[in-house]
Image 1: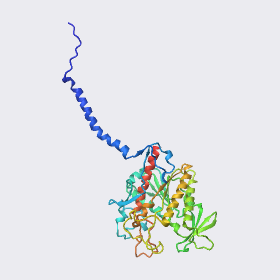
Image 2: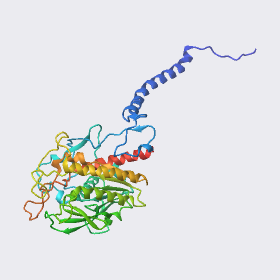
Image 3: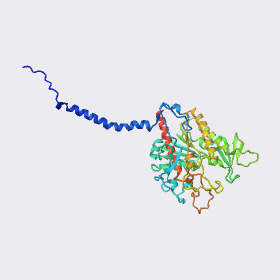
Image 4: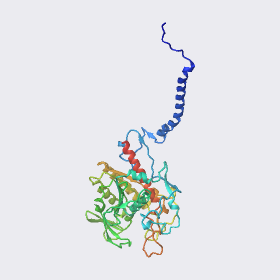
Amino acid sequence: MKFQDYEPPSSPKHMIPKVTLLAILVILIFAITPLWYPLLSYSTSHLKINKNNIPSSSSHDQGQEENLPSTYVEKCDIFSGEWVPNPKAPYYTNKTCWAIHEHQNCIKYGRPDSEFMKWRWKPSECELPIFNPFQFLEIVKGKSMAFVGDSVGRNQMQSMICLLSRVEWPIDVSYTTDEYFKRWKYPSYNFTMATFWTPHLVRSKMADSHGPSNTGLFNLYLDEFDEKWTTQIEEFDYIILDGGHWFYRPMVFYEKQKIVGCHYCLLENVPDLTMFYGYRKAFRTAFKAIDSLENFKGIVFLRTFAPSHFENGKWNQGGNCVRTKPFRSNETRLESTNLELYMIQLEEFKKAEKEGRKKGLKLKLLDTTQAMLLRPDGHPSRYGHWPQENVTLYNDCVHWCLPGPIDTWSDFLLEMLKMEGMRSAIS
């Protein structure tokens, strides 16, 4: 008897595995789709990719568009906005941070209110994250940062040391005992920050300790580099440049080693060219000094002028700052001398940016002016020393209490470093 190959007929019993497989596949599709959809939505709505309508250049990004790919991620102007309450602040205190300069240690010296510490900057069209010290130190690992300018620049560096103290304290690696030229290193991250005192940015010296207004008379050599900083910064990865308040004092201007004019010097036969002449020339020379550095490959941040808030008198004539809350943006505006100083900075920045681009130099605008214009409540005033101390100090409406609104400058700086990292990643 022959046996033929036998194939049993199909039956429902033998179809079960295929039906089950199909059902499982359908369930998986319906389960995964809701999870994937938000990712598709995020890529179009949150990143705001615009393929055809690339925004025109601004002072922050001018000259960079040609390096961008055809799809450009739009950015928000983080420097335009309002101050909003932040009950979580401050993130350090005068008792937890030893880096606070005595004259900015407002709580120690009896300032009675504390609301000035409890605000954060809210840009009009986006959110500005609060400074993350861990993230910052990861970004700057193995790098170095120089604060070049006056005591407000030092105020900024001390603010940053306090903010970073949640991660690590730096060690003093200064080359000198001069407090105006300090270097600090974070060993775990091989990150160094330094401050270089140069109140006029160019070579200068005191000609008379009294002068016409009893605040000193200074000779400014507007076409000469201040080598105390220009010979030291070539090795740095980041330079934060600032200047402003020292230009209010009487000055004599030199160019090509000859007197060309002055600001309120009251010298016979010396024309008063105003402080604005010296301010413009000083920034022009400072940018020229950086541009002349053959081996500098870092990024220069121009930190714009932070207005003072003297009311009821000038800084040396009894003026004071006693407000306890920020202004809203519609309650004040940049005008007069403050506006002129700010515009000079922007104009000289744009010229320097154009020149620097020829050799690949990166310049960025750290625009703190509008935010700080709105903070008349953030200054030490008379709370920079004990009332009974026998000292001659004016009410301080120039520097900033620590903790205080100057801590927001680190929010700005970290966001700019993150954006620079994104640019490098997509270029």
